[in-house]
Amino acid sequence: MMTVITRQFTKDILSSTLFALIALVALFAFFDLVGQLDSIGNGRTLADAFLLTGLSLPGRIYQVMPLAALLSSIYIMSRWAASSEFTVLRVAGLSPLRLCMSLSVSAVILVGTTYVFGEFLAPPAEKYAVEVKTLSKSQNLTARGYSTGVWLRDVAVVDNQTLNRYINVSYIRADNNRETGAWRVFEFSDKGFLLRMISSKTASYSTDEGWTLHNVEISTYPVVPRGEEADVKGLEVKRTTEKSLVFSSTLGPDMLSVFTSRPDDMSLRDLSRMITHLQANSQDSEKQEIAFWTKLFYPLSTLVMMTLSMPFAYMNARSGGMAIKMFAGIMIGITFYALSNIFSYLGSTTMLTPMWAALAPTLGMLVAGAIAMLFVERR
Image (cartoon, rainbow, N blue to C red; front, side):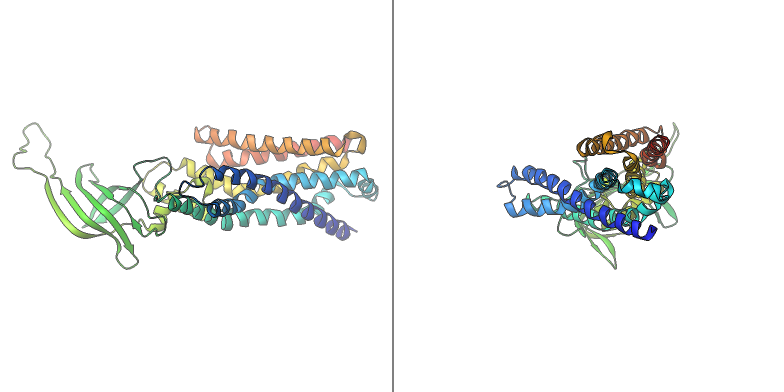
């Protein structure tokens, strides 16, 4: 009997989730398209507006999947309860644990689908959308929030000497991330002395040689001796120019492209690489860590949302109409997204570790679902 029940639950929930997804995503797509209309004629065409709206769909599906799963599960549970089908199943021995097991098949499918959209479809679509936006306005890619470009820290060993490099890249070509604008490189010794400042007009990357800086100006600074009686006479800054300079660095074009994306729009792989680079260079990676753990645990929220729908199966028709129950589901979804934003802020203020800041909303909703389940079961 359990196989039949599981198959029916899976079929009903997946079909209703697809319907809810289409409705929610279509609503968001309409607002996204309306928002694009203002830029038509300002370097962007109607075709660009439709393209950008289409590129936002994978991200929208990823965002609303937990809510769609919650609403569809509440609808199916309420429908089975209203038609007394669930009452018959309870009399036949269907326990909350068996109900949870029957929901697990559809939950695993939806969790896997959420992960695929969040990891493999939404990030490249968002990245391409950013390129379309910049190209339509004849602009180039730069770091979000920094008008001066991308700022990076790199540690290199040259001639058995450890160099701390602070690199500023003005922009990255939107149509080719192997070509960039101007570079400024500040090289410091491990003792904190400024050794060189390198500036170039442009740069290009090749797999064999790495970065090649073009039209380069190099300022070499002398090491100023310490002490009150130190002789600084004769010390001067040496300036040289080069038509091109091969610049060895651990930073590749992919890493530069990562810094032009928002952490929330990046894949787990890119976030992991970015966090590793920031930590290796003693830079703050808290924001990226929160985004990483949030993206890792977010698909599980689809499973949690489905468990929150279980108490609705134990409510009879007199407990409220379908509209009231769907409204309750929407409020639950809004509460979850609000908690996610609150705990994300708490994680950024170091009150919680990034992992717990991302996991706390999911655990909180799971505990709330368990309490509600115990309450309706004892009635």
